[in-house]
Length: 295
Image 1: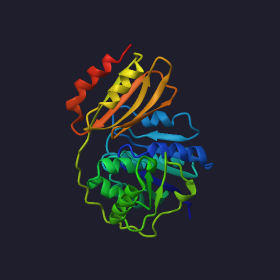
Image 2: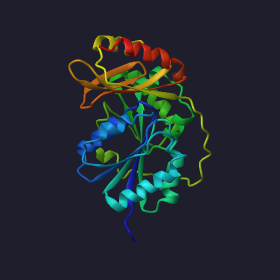
Image 3: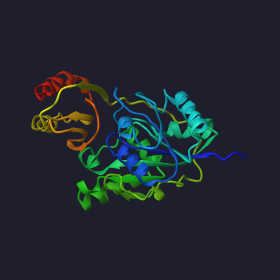
Image 4: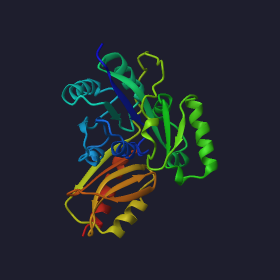
């Protein structure tokens, strides 16, 4: 009998820390890992973050990995196994994906792999600021074999207890691990799949809550101006990410629910993606304000 390659699925809402967790896994796991990524937005920011690591990667591009890209997903998995023969495969979905459809497809249509577990990353601070868990978020939590409650350093202990109670209402069995910047022993993430999963095809309800647009520029930006811009983004802008070139260097910019940080990064030009509710209504204003920060 042919050995099936273990596949771990990393899911979770926008900005919860999935790519940060993936970078931690790549830095700490010695096995040969193949990466499959899917992003929301025209510029594959997260894929660029992963480049340079000793991994094999297939970037599925924009769209919904849980429905329109299932054909490409199967082909990518089969191609990776044939050409790379990894020890394990890690799939990072877009924050807008409902993983139940992907879980069904993995179990029913891709016999060369076995589902090794679903890891759902939750932003503790984001859940405090936006306590309502929507349809997609609920599906992501229900599918989890393990839940990483990330960014716990940003919220109070009493809030963490309330969040854990809320998560347990959707998933009574998955352990909840408190993490900062996705720092966790990778051994807790692999080989954790539930013994049995329902193989009923999911009733897939699309609720397109978010839009996105991207921005690129060869210009150098004034840092103080850009920080003022980031601090005054409308509440409807839930997520922004990308690269910003300042006078001293270029940085990876991560914005989630009003909080942001910078990390030095090698990149040629400024590239940004903005994601939010009716974000296209704010596009002209955001681009105009960005222009004002150019040197």
